[in-house]
Length: 460
Image (cartoon, rainbow, N blue to C red; front, side):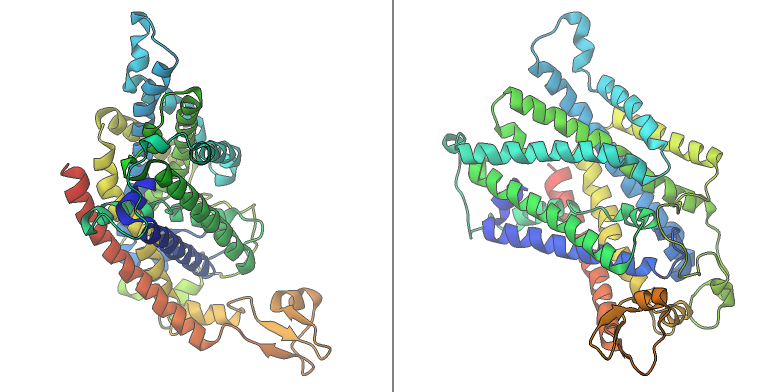
């Protein structure tokens, strides 16, 4: 992020970071809207594909699997590059311990550590590991911020650009970094499936808190890091700091973060591979949720409301043997690739440009645009079941309550109450148009990122 501000200037860089957070958050919001058309606890990209673009679902799932697999491999490559540096920071070692300088040794060790986490079925089983990963990130933020306020980097600081940018080409090369920093959409459906309360208000609050906190963190590190070193800042900011115990701890924290993030990529990768293996072409009669399609309404995907909460299993239909086999294949293949490929830039240049963009923008936009079609049977059924859950009833004494609260109280919509519908047709039409615009934006971002990565990362 500091390098992005170096290329864009502070003002433009801050605006781009905020814009990336807004678009990523909108993609997450569209996923929560799409999930309401599916059976509670079974939301996934595969399920949505079967209801919207059934014969293309294998392409979507393959893209998600490749993206998650590639990001997981990149984590292992980063760990393999960092651990020898961490070991050398503790001092020279004898020739009998030369293997500690070998990245292959550390990739092997880290892989053995994360294997048990990969075989966990549920994302909430990784909550403690996620807390440790967040603590590692927090340490990095504190380190960068503390050095800025201490002012011990002033002598190494280059030119600081506030409004001026480095030009269109360097700016485009940094744009993918900012966009992909918010990519977490592959885990959104899994989180929705396991939330005890996945009501619209709760999910919107969750998205706002997550994206907002991430945006604040990125801005804090970007601004303080750039003001510390100016145009002398490097892509990996910890390289700018002189060797110290605090810096070594920071590198260890980064290793912990990537190590514990690997299972979070393996989880959606496994689900997508399973969906690809289960995919079968569907006939024309089963192809679209438009029109009179009773088979869709009787499908296990079609019940729009049902028991929600943590008892739902996002991978409950996968047998133990199948689960173990797919997990093993992911582990073995990612290990082999990480052992043979050393260029992190080449991995992220194409996997990130295609897979991350598709998951963050293109798929959420296309899925919601298709499934929310007013002529869709599923959409009409959802409307009958109080589609938005934000219909408000106002009593004669001025007290307002939601439709769900009224149903729990056994209150019917009598003449003493009037219904205020916030989900009006205009709002739904506007949301559909915005979802299509998000998908188009994703296509533009994909092209821009592919071109910039090809010419500025891989070529150099």
